[in-house]
Image (cartoon, rainbow, N blue to C red; front, side):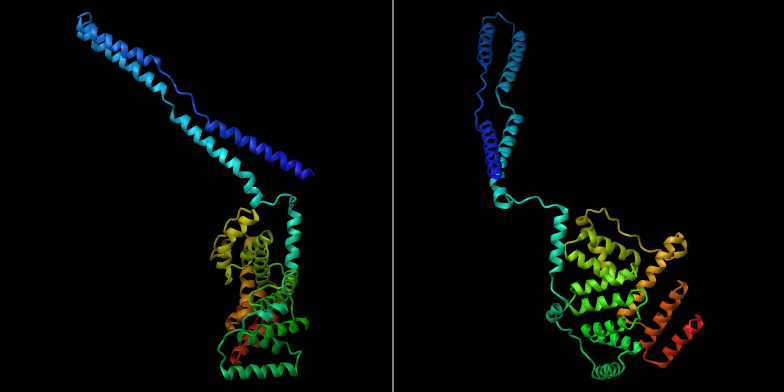
Length: 387
């Protein structure tokens, strides 16, 4: 009943306003009369007669004609409607038209009777929709298969590795090698399974292994972040809040799930801790839009200076940590040579993280294919005093 009264009142007020404006536009202005014009014409005629009778000199007659003509022009100008009045009339016409169209347009496009939806209610609905999205298993079933050419000898070696890991399922080095090679073949689901078992053996010390698992799950789902993958990424961030891969993937899933406020926080943090990440350019490209939708005034981060020693102490630590985390994420995802793994080991040692340095040595050693590379990693471990 209240809604009916409201709409009746609103409709009546709109109709009255539109009618008043339309009346003002359509009403014809009263014509302006200029009776003085006839008087001035008569004066000119009498002036000609006076000149003919020699009652007025020619010089005085010219002066009088100029004055009478000037007064005629002023009277004629006063009789014409001004351009300002015409413009005002068109303005009133436009307002009248918009007023008349406002109510039917809202009834067509709006939602009469729909209650105001506060921020808390909107967030609750978005989160309910995100919780109802497809599972990891459903996403993997519909994900396109990896179309990668496989060299038969290499495929045979990977099969031997699978058999060896099946025979010794708790071999950490074998599992790490299997994760890397399954991922190289595009078998991300199998790589995620091996990575999950690796984590269950307690080899994760700083959240990087969980970040790797989350990335493998996302790749197995064709780039989609499932609820299960999101849970893994959150666990990784709970152990290491600066884990670059987890921050990046969490930011992307929040952006796609209608939470630009959270996407901004994750991605802005990811940009700070991973100055050399492969996805950095893509994130910088989408950040203006995400910041706008989040209602945040965002300034792109400056390029990291080459001379870290020139930074303040707190910024030095942050820059070094970001570079180390970025290197670790890249090696875990794409692999690298012995020199890169040794660089990561030394970086962890400098940061006072000996367990992480030993973990990098184990992962790098498992990824090497020659005895010389493995020996170089062993020597680097001994040089650091971490045997």
